[in-house]
Length: 197
Image 1 (tube, rainbow, N blue to C red):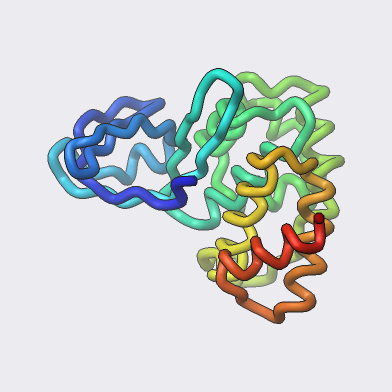
Image 2: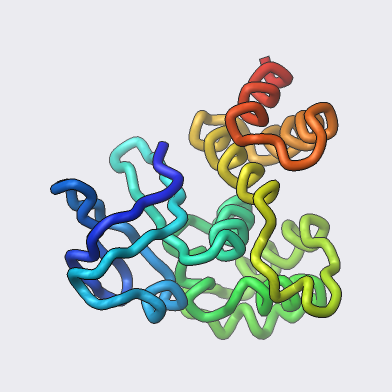
């Protein structure tokens, strides 16, 4: 599974880019927030990657910050929200905006995003409300810590292995309690798989 890509930017379009890593071109779907921060073609680019595996395709989704990737991973746990829609949502709202919208239950702001209707907006608000912690002051503006990145990568791996999102979250929570704060993703995944066995 690919979690990070660094290479030369070969192609740049609003919905996807191509990153050349030692002669291999990877198509990576990106939100507009990431697209706007990209350098020009030919320059080096590095992105946090989520590998999405389907029966008929393996797709890569890239994000400039861990916070964007973390919010993407939360969004795709919502019933009816696939990776493309999650990218679309992050193209219109920053992770901090989305966090605030979910905590304040502002469905009308979500419905302004193309592809998000009333039912999807309600599901996002309902299913993610309890997963959002209240952040105060400048803490909300800071990038996610390494522990969240480990959690996000491990969570993504478990879901891609076929575990249900709720099952993966519960097991990851137990694993983090037993391993302590900020475990490396390999240890976290190993412990979580042991708990799920």
